[in-house]
Amino acid sequence: MSVTKIDLLNKRFSKSMIGYSRAEVDQFMLEVAETVGELVDAGKDMRKKIKRMDAMLQEYRQRDEALRDTLMNTQKVVDDIKTSAHREAKLIRDEAESKAEETIRKGHERLASVYEDIESLKRQRTQFEAQLKSLLDAHLRMLEHSDPEVDRIEELESKLTFLKKAE
Image (cartoon, rainbow, N blue to C red; front, side):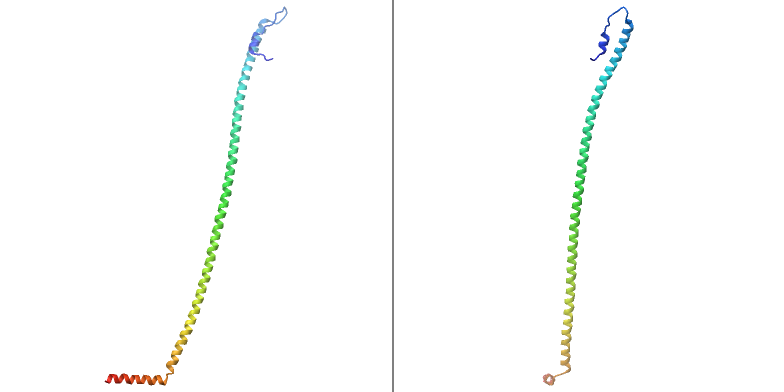
């Protein structure tokens, strides 16, 4: 059973011939009642404070859990972004390498084509020089070996021209 301040103040003792002094008992009861009252009030205050603290603790735990979830989600998003960025960078690098290799391959093909063209032009020049030399040699031989018939025709043409002028 719980004793309250009011219970202590209203408590009456039976009177006997030999007993305690009523004034001392009343005074003591008054002091005990005050002390018990203060303790009960302090207990009530403490229970209220504990309830407030429990509510605050629960709220802080919820906030902590929400923050932890937020941090974990943020970390996951950051990791996903990093993974995506690495993947995209690899694709870009691979594409650039592929384009560079294609450009180099085309350059080599063009260089080979230019060398082939140069070689073809050298062969053509050599053939042209040989043909020109052959033609010049043939004309030179013709000039050096004049045909007596051609000489006779030229002489007749010269005479004919002279006679025409004389007329």
